[in-house]
Amino acid sequence: MKTIFIAALVTILSHATVATAATPLDAATASLIDASLAGDQRTDTEKARDVYRHPKDALAFYGLSASMSVIEIFPGGGWWTNVLAPVLRDKGKLTVAMDTDLNNANARGGLGKTLERYAAKPKIFDKVEMINFDPAHNTKLGADNSIDMVLLFRDMHNLIADNKAAETLKLAFDVLKKGGALAIEQHRWPDNKAFPAKRPNWEDGNWGYVKTSEVVALAKAAGFVLASSSELNANARDTKDYPNSVWSLPPTLADGDKNKAQYLAIGESDRMTLKFVKP
Image (cartoon, one colour):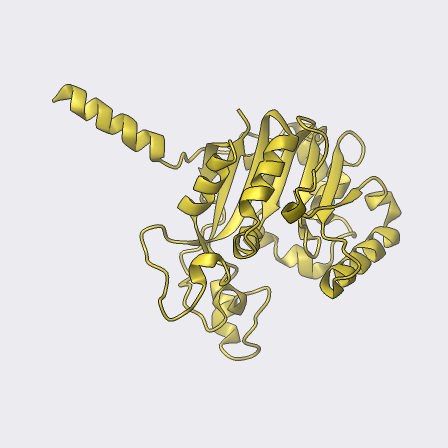
């Protein structure tokens, strides 16, 4: 009986999500983050989201140091880039991996806005490296075993929907040093709850919410080990049943003025916050 109990306990622990408190930031990194969060390279709108995105605590959880080399995959509007660029500018390195395909209107527009932002604040963004990243064509993120941390924030649903998640995670694994960290933040659907049958392609990521178990399985298949998880970005008010799914909530507010007060009271989505390591 004792042997059976121990075996069962080992099985449970091997599948459990490990919840771990953040390691305190070193003083220099903490000071740089504080200065960046208050900096004028960030708009008032971006700063207003700090209450939902918990940037300093999140970076502490992931184990950021100002001397690290970091790749941010698909930075979108640059919310995190604006935080990280000043922190990593002098002793570290920030690389943004984005779709710079000039034949794609969305990519072209995003690239233009990014370049404008960098040009407006050269003393902040002059050392940020921009690379084209196309996981469908196995585009490398850099030399193997060369990077300390890879960030993949609120984009796993797109990668799953586009059938690019496995390739992206494998390329992230390749570029990381041994012991390097993969940081993932993603809108979260409960593992123990079925996806709504009334919405097609929900399980394919098209509605934004993804199950933690799916993300963990994909990362483990790429070779990663789940080091820790955090409820830092949990939001129990997020009922996940809106007309436009997660995009009904701020910051998108896809429903316009309809139920706007309700969505603002809910805040941004309930999200998983995961740290994986390359063994």
